[in-house]
Amino acid sequence: MTALVDAAVLNAAPGRLEIEKLRLDVPGPDEVLVRVVSAGLCHSDLHEIDGTFASEPPIVLGHEASGVVEAAGANVVGLRVGDHVVTCLSVFCGRCRYCTGGRLTLCENRSRLSHQRPGPRLVNAAGRPVRPTAGIGAFAQAMVVHQNALVRIPSDMPMAPASILGCAVTTGLGAVFRGARVEPGSSVVVIGTGGIGTAAIQGARIAGATQIIAVDLIPEKLKAAERFGATHALHAGESDPVEAVREITGGGADFAFEAVGRSTTVEQAFAMLRPGGLATVVGMVPEHTPIRVSGPELFLQEKRLQGSFMGSNQFKTDIPRYVDLYLQGRLLLDDMVSEHVTLAGINEGFELLAQGRATRVVADIGEI
Image (tube, rainbow, N blue to C red; front, side, top):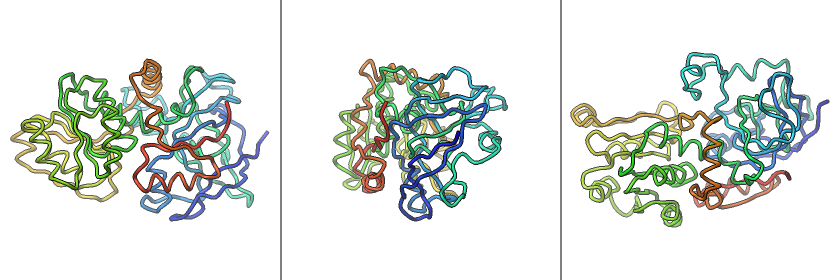
């Protein structure tokens, strides 16, 4: 039986989210009905709201969330009613050449999974289908998602910090652990200390990096970065960050992570490297944005530049490991959640995010 749920809907972009009653369909054979408890607010959501990234309204945004399983389809394996779960937008088919090769974030059938069901998951009062972003749509009281977009977490994992595991944390930690494979004793620079950058800083600390340099324009975020493991904090507006990194590291960093999504900061990340160093782009650089790097540095100094989508994750195994790190006190998720809002106050949460002073904002939507 379908149900009515409150959801934050983007009806036009740029625009604001509007709380509406939507009709939520029952889960199909491969789908799971999840009652949402907490949902993280991500910059990619903000970019759809402000029109930076093209979207297709009406749409329910939100892709990192925690919740409780309410019902499961006939083909669902490993998830039962009452389980606590986390969503991840890198849903995978499990059958294509990328999935079978272990590169789930490159799944070539991801977009098809949502089209396999006979009808829309969400419908508004006018009878118009409302698209759930990434097949999730977490800014709602409940959601119906494909089983391959969920992972079970232990019941003693708090829901608010758990909600940011599926995007910000997985992206930042995965870029360090899977994408770059940072080694103990390395020097690391992270440009941009929002949710993803903060996760990358913690990943570098956990991996054993001895120099972790945080670069940002906001003093409060730089101070917070030191709490998460940064050994140095550079204000990018007060000096040349490239020269400062070279001076601190004695010639350049072993690894650089760009978590802003701009061509200038990508180019800076590459320039900050020592010969043989690796720069990883984690930020969402807009389409058709040119990036220029030095040819001699690329081939004579063997510097490398790579992308990392969603931390190149294998989230079904990665997220339970990150939960263990949190429960051991090694991964500081509570400190990453700098603000809480309600579903009704979600626009205020995005205003905080737009100001650049919030590490991560979480919407508290339901109860366990």
